[in-house]
Image (cartoon, rainbow, N blue to C red; front, top):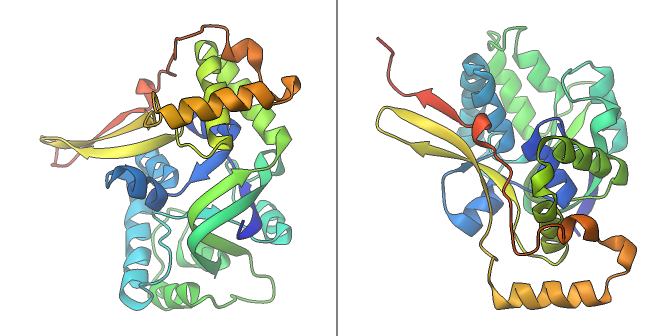
Length: 280
């Protein structure tokens, strides 16, 4: 484990809830390493889903400064956003960032990463107006942001992480389970198997977002990793775990409710077609 941190998880979204209960979150780069290019970060997927293309345009411009002047820094478009101190996490809530940035969704995590960039998130709020447009002096502010400079006496330190995060918080994982239970009760067995797979170091069950080019549009869709399915090493590891694990550490009722059947959560309603050409 490289270090601990704190993260806000939007568990009202079933994909986030699934990965939260599963227990391991992965950045885009980690997914690319396993499956090749095409995956996008859940944060970027959220921007596409919301249709906030002004925010996307601004983020692309901020990232262009990174690529030009700080190529070794982790991109906001691909990394995970993690606070490395609880004071900064709580300061983000007090700053009224909105959405899921409130303590009901805050949890501690263990981080493992190949790269991490520490920045003061206050610079971002100074760079953007209320409609997510870049202010006139944004480029100078972006340089300060990517350099890791504090914006003042009360910085909100954030890590942009290329790696994975183990979710420690029992409360938020239980809340995530309730979200899946209410929306996809038929998938609880697969969810529990996914949790065990993550515990044993396998990627089975992780859900990621992918952007695929079609003829005249791009398709944003979510896919569940099944690369370990049928792998003798995986099957042996799970069998050994189930033999030795304390009974109360496994949700046996869900796991064995439909033996031999892996019922996938239906995430098609979260897919989105994004036009690539102007519409007539």
